[in-house]
Length: 159
Ligand code: ADP
Image (cartoon, helix red, strand yellow):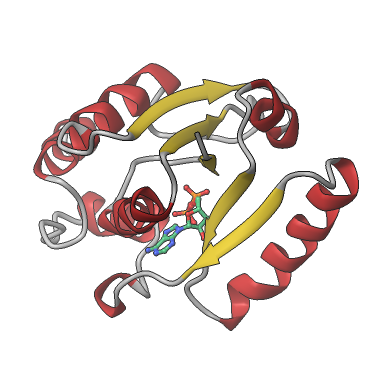
């Protein structure tokens, strides 16, 4: 059983995240999206809300699940008997940070590999922050997030 962890903030999940999760689901037996719970990060959605949004968005994917963790990601990976972490690469600017993280994670846990994947071109410029900014200005985000995320963003931001 080859398991891979997809760590992130997912505040909220976007079609870019889903694109990466689906690609990983083809290559691995099980993909666990792990919401990294950083109390210092100011997030719009609570961890519970993010879990619910992810669950609704991955319902149709048999071998993808969601969890959250306060622990170091490599520790979470080992506890869940995963063999790798997956990260999305959108641009050269992602590369430097991701490269550093991958090397650091490897020095902490040499048995856990990091796998990088590129999303579909449509999602190359997408991140959760941009989606939240567009939604706050009442722009159309329907091409970027699942319908349930769009609805929740609207109700949270346009109160
Ligand atoms: P962000 O706040 O950048 O949207 P997260 O911390 O939730 O992201 O990201 C988790 C992982 O998902 C990272 O590896 C990030 O590069 C990747 N990711 C985020 N958005 C996309 C996207 N549109 N396409 C591909 N990968 C993405």
